[in-house]
Image (cartoon, rainbow, N blue to C red; front, side, top):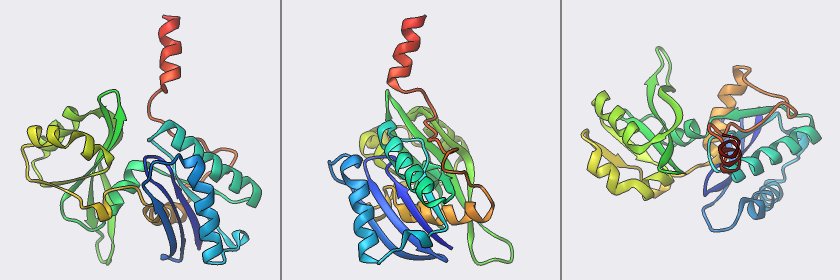
Amino acid sequence: MKILALDSSGLVASVAVMENDNLIAEYTMNYKKTHSQTLLPMLDEVKKMIELDLSTLDAIAVAAGPGSFTGLRIGSATAKGLGLALNLPIVPVKTVDALAYNLYGTDKLVCPLMDARRNQVYTGIYSFAKQENASDYQLEEILPQCAVELQEIIEKLNTLGKEVIFLGDGVTVYKEKIEELIKVPYSFAPASCNRQRAACVAALGEELFAAGKIQTAAEHEPDYLRLSQAERERLEKQC
């Protein structure tokens, strides 16, 4: 099983190739260039460095949303184009799930926070459960990915009463507010594992592929979770 993974859902652009649970290559950038400038050149560089024959791929996993509307469109368009050209299935991976996967195996709650603007965050609450008679962990959704105000997700965490680790670009934006509102033990993930990584998209993508949760390239569309600004403005004018 060889899978190409893409993530351009946030500030980070990331490309990875994984084969049979072995990470062969990963290229991640968190810099002030647009994903339209970076994603395809990054993919091309990975292809050259590992001498990747695209025809040997079994699937393309992509961070399917939520996230930056423009970033999601770039990632999905890239995945769709490759999928159509190579006749490969698309494995849509929930962006917030993949972000939580950075902290695989922790016994704490995991709360990814992506800045969604308009005083909201894309977020969710997760835990890792050890599988019976198995050596690995399963990512469990305590609260599936959603778009809410920060206060709402903090109130939910306070109600659960368990220690939590925060990660994602929303931490930078809302750190002081988190510290003001949180009532349970908490920490912030270090820079080495607090942003999107295509390796996590690939790892979850392998699990989803095995479970048959795939799409054709023609079917695939990003999941924005909420309306774009242009769509909101159009609806407001109609009212």
